[in-house]
Amino acid sequence: MWQFRTREALAAVARFAFVVALGAVTSGCFQPLYGNQTIGSDDSVRDKLGSVEIPEIKAANGTPDARIAVAVRNALLYDFDGGQTPTSPTYRLVITFGSGRTTVITDVASGRPDAQVESINAVLTLTEIATQKVVLQTSTFARASLDIPGSAQRFAQQRAARNAEDRAVDVLAENIRNRLASYFVAGT
Image (cartoon, rainbow, N blue to C red; front, side, top):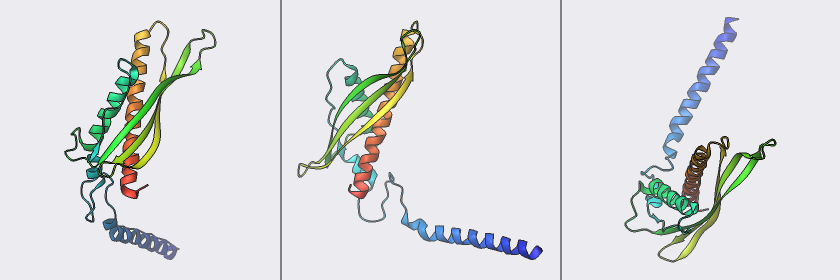
């Protein structure tokens, strides 16, 4: 009976040793996606994101879209290079977007909305500045829901809508950053 336990223990130790050895062998093959060190002579994804110029996003002045446009651009500038503008950009990212609000749930008794969804849809065009060639054209979106408090709390409703917009902006900026990082790594 003790022979079976020692076989199981030896098998477990052998499996553990195999996993550790495999990890040690393959650990040199990986690098962080957003790290600033590279294995070869290529620029890192962080360096390439830092060389992207983001012009002002067009939106009508005085509208909620104008506030969202500034927030998206600021979030991307911070994500790409810590808020610094690139000194010699090699790419230009042009973003066009539209935002909206959709009522999802309506109270049957009062007819007032109980929940809404803030949405932002964006179209991205990444252009290589030297050749004026469009290297990437894609679209992305972000959604954030909000619960609407009672009708007597109109300021709380406005604040909830603003918070939902801010969350949608953060999600959109993250989607754009990930999409561009995917392009810079895989070329697709």
